[in-house]
Every structure is written in C-alpha cells, then in structure tokens.
Image (tube, rainbow, N blue to C red; front, side):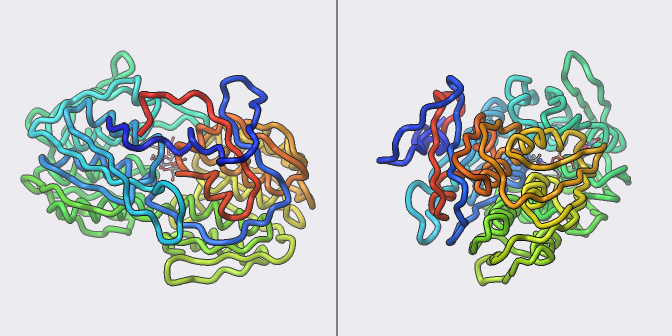
Length: 465
Ligand code: EPU
C-alpha cells in the first residue's frame, strides 16, 4: 500500500483553528456551528458505489486496468487491500485537482495489475469492514470457477440478504454452499448463460450477475435488473473491456458471454448521493450552492422535491445549482430503486422535513434499519414519529444543538447537515463513518462557509492511503 496519500479525515483540523477537545476519548468528531447558510461551489468526484465495483470488475481481465475519478475515501483503501490479497498489484496515485479547489485532490487514480490467475478467497476481516467486497464473487467465479467469500452479514441500516446473488449464480450452473460464515461457489465447467428474474432490482445482485455473465457460455438475461447510474457505469466499463451487453440502463439486461476481456482505462461516474447531500444542505440552510461533477438527471425526483419545497434548481454546464430563499415547505418522500428517490438520501429527506413548514410523511422501502438514526435527530429536537417503514415528521423553525452520533455514512452526513439548522454548536461523533463515503467533507463544508472543525481519532495505519 502506498503511503503517498493520507485519508483526508485524519488531517482536517484547519491550520490555525482552535483545537477541538473530543468529549468522548479516542472518538473522532466534527464540530459545526449552526446558523450557517451553505453558499458557493462544490466539486463532486466519482461515486463510491461505482468505483468499488469497477475495482472488482477489473478482476475480469488480466493486465493493468486504470480507474480515474475514484473518491479518496477509506472504503477504496479497503477494496484495494481485498484485491491485493487476491494477488493483484494496486497502486493509488493522486488524481487531478478540480478547478478552483485548494488542498489535496478529493479523487485518486487506482491502477490495478491483475494476474493471470487471481486468488479465490476474501476473508471476513476485510469483508466485515467493506460489505461491497461481495462484488468479487461474480468476477472470481467467472474467471476461476471457484470462490470463497466471507458472508458480510447485516449492518446498521438493515439485514441485507444475499439470496438473489446466490439464486442467480445457481441458475447459471454454480453450486453454492454456506459454511463457517463463508459463501462458497463453484462452477468447474464454467458458468452457463441463463434467464434470471430478480425478485427485487437489487443493485449488488445485478452487479454480481452481470459480471459473472460477461464470461459465461451463451446468453444471459437478467430481468427486473437494477438501473442505477452506477450499474450503467459498470456496464460501460465492461463493454469497453469487450463484453457484449444490451439494455444498459433498462430493467432487462441481455449479456452474450465472450471468451476473454481486456483491461481498460475508465473514469468513474459522479457521485449522485454526495451531490444530493449538498443539494439538500443548500435547501435546508436556505443557501445557494453550485454542485459540479454530477448530471442532475441522476437526481430528477430528489431535485423535484426541492422545487416542491420552494427551492430553485437550475441545470448548469458542469452540474446544477440549488437555491432556497425561504423556509422550505413540507413535502412527502418515498424511497425506491432508481429512478425513485434514493434510500441513501433518506437522512437528508428527514433533515429537510425536520425544518420544513408543515408535516411530511417519509417512507423507506429499501432497508429495514434506515430509521435507526432518527433517535439522534430527536436529540437535535426533531419531531419524528416512526411506524414500520413510515415516519411522520413535523417541521420546526429551528433545531437545537446536542452531541449526536453518526451511525452510518449517510446518517452521519445527514446529522452534520441538520446540525447547520440548530442553534449553537453541535458535536457529531463517530464521523469515521462519513469518511467512508465523502472525501474531505469538512473541507467542503468549510469552503461553503460553515464554521467547522474536525478532531481526529488515531489513524488506522492499515487503511490509510
Ligand atoms: N436484498 C436481499 N437479497 C439480496 C440482495 C438484496 O434481500 O440478494 C435486499 C437488501 O437486504 C436490501 C435491499 O434488497 O434490503 C436492497 O439491496 P441492494 O442489493 O439493492 O443494495 P446493495 O447492493 O446492498 C447498494 C449500495 C447502498 C445503497 C443500495 C440501494 C453499494 C456498496 N451499496 O447496496 O449504498 O443504499 O445499493 O441503492 O453499492 C451507501 O452507500 O451508504 C449504501 C448503503
């Protein structure tokens, strides 16, 4: 692992800013002053949820694959380690700094040298830290005919099954078993094309199945496939590698297996969830933010909600701009697979509702544990009642600062944004979760006019850049 770059999270105490004394020993935290309006310009780099899978897709071709516009976040360092343990050489170098930005680049270039015969095992010590490691299942089964990947289990947002990954691979002729916490798949004669109907358009299952199908014998059809922009990005890279895929961006993917793929250079698609976080932040704080690096079409429904709430959203050459002049009006939100409202923006929808004029009904349809973080929002004074997968949120003019705890990536970012609407100073602890999805979150907040400081926990030398 190269040490030429460091995780931004550990080094964000602004030069000259007074030191923050953590209230909880050894816990990293962000301290923000409420009342700020987000104003200015922010550059969003590649999507975590695409880059991680693009790295797994590199396993499909021996040789050097180069992925650019990769976010400089902890999860990427973990995925690099997963690949190294599979015998790949992975080098991470700084990417270009977006125009007008100070400091280290928020993105990196990942160079992956894949051997002729990559390894076949991903251990629990890494998989438990990075659920997305499961994305090596399809590519390794396709390349090696055998794979043993630790079962990632559930996490803070829900139970997170793997049944659709497994059932789809079984349809393609794999024998699959579960033993001692591992998913073991083998297809000694190679995978066979098949027709697969997914019960639900699972992002992870669609990715694993398409990555398995590109090297299978014959044709595969995946029905009710996920169609998130990140899936489109992965399919685009696979096509550039020589894969034959039709229906990209629709819910039916048709794949004609090929003998072999070649390595490529590919730029990661912009992160719509990070972009959406800034869009909601602008609306909640009655600010004005130009978000660069993401196509607003990826956020159609979310941005339309902001317009219904009274905001002004304008497409720009390099992204889009969001402005909110008055207190937002309450809007209802329902999360659904793309092109529906993204579940990863649910904490931001709850945040918006918490400060809106009126009552909002927010419905979560993807993860059973997404509402866990509303207890932290309640500590900030938000008026939220949940019942199953619904939450009724009665907006307040202002929230009230209190120490709160980030429980996952998106809840963490949502709490920081909500804290901007509180009176006084809020400390959000366990913000290492935010580092998993947002490169230099503190730097971006600061550039948008927020008084913000970061106190660091000791760095984990195993997973720093
Ligand atoms: N599911 C099953 N069985 C399966 C697969 C999924 O029951 O075989 C269930 C899950 O338990 C969940 C739902 O289906 O309740 C959706 O799961 P999906 O497979 O679509 O999600 P994922 O691939 O596990 C990715 C993102 C998530 C994002 C979701 C939905 C990555 C690494 N993660 O997860 O991102 O919320 O799609 O869009 O791509 C995040 O970035 O913070 C994050 C959680």
